[in-house]
Amino acid sequence: MPNLTVSGVRTTIVDLPILRPHRFANHSIDAQTYLLVEVVTDAGFVGLGEGVSPGGPWWGGESIEGQKQIIDCYLAPALIGSDVEDLAGTRRQLDRIAFANLFAKAALETALLDAIGQAHNVALSTLLGGATRTELPLRWPLSGAGTGGTLEEAAERVAAGYRRIKFKMGALAPREDIDRVGELVDKIGDGVDYLGDPNGTWDLRTATWAVRELEAIGLSAVEQPVERRDVRGLAELRSRADRIDIMADESVCVPADALEVVRERACDSVAVKPGKAGGLRAAALIAAILDTASIGPYGGTALESPVGTAASAHLFATFPRLLHGCELVGPLLLADSVITEPLAYTDGILTVPTGPGLGVRLDHDKVDRYRRR
Image 1 (cartoon, rainbow, N blue to C red):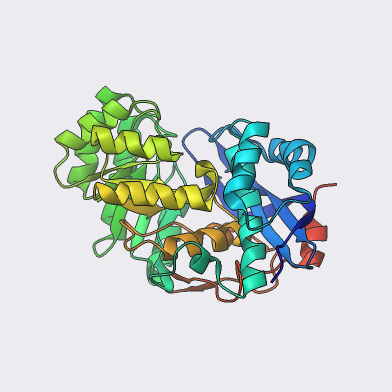
Image 2: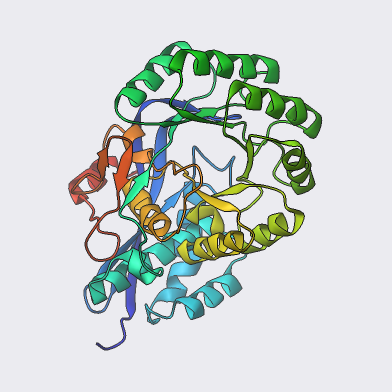
């Protein structure tokens, strides 16, 4: 087969409704916005990627509007005429053009990989080294603050087969937040694995007693208890923890961050996300670095649509182990979709899409309905 060449790049912002508000530590959303990226090849294959930002630029510094601008004005023109399969060369070129912009570059890389998978009739997971599993165990995230509707939602998910629950924390005062989580754990009951995520809102002193109390409540892990730059704080918490894992999220975005937490022995697990890593290949490298120190990868989420979820599912399927499962439930929070066939969710399990590339295709009528005008 002759080399595939990029002949065009299309970007479309879509605003999708969600089923219920979702609260993080410092932000809440009642809709989710995505950037759909299509890389068109001279052979007719159209690769699909997704830019995502969980509710805006508060988390990773990139807005969806900014991702579209950097791609349209700077990155896409550099791709025209390039070899689709020269991923390393393309990345070097994009890095010369624009510093950082990791979510935007991740979206482009996913689209390139999707086009390659289609051209060679292989799944994206094969391009990333080969799948070790076809099903991914899911953890359901409960929105921060409140117990009423949250308890009902938890009961529904447990009845539907979910055995892993995550509490979004940090929106309340620490004492109030921990009491809320304790009440929910008591009411939800045994047979469920619990994780707390305050999104880095605690200082080390607060986190020290808070982690101890969450451990006593029965949580198996706490995600990013301290500010993202406080890797030493993570390490100190880990040294004091007994039966609860310390998980890094915001502290580990790119491979160099993974090296730092390995060097500092700062955590037991890391939430791996392709967007914050700058792409699927960088995220796979992070997982490999963590594996050298027996730090387990957790399948993190930025509340992706089915497009980004499919990409992450292919990546996570290549991991030999997933400590604490994964959180690829973004499509289940959406009131509608932009792909032709829904992803397969059953009993708290996501089946990795089959077919070439991502294994999903856009529903262009839905894209037109929700695209920003």
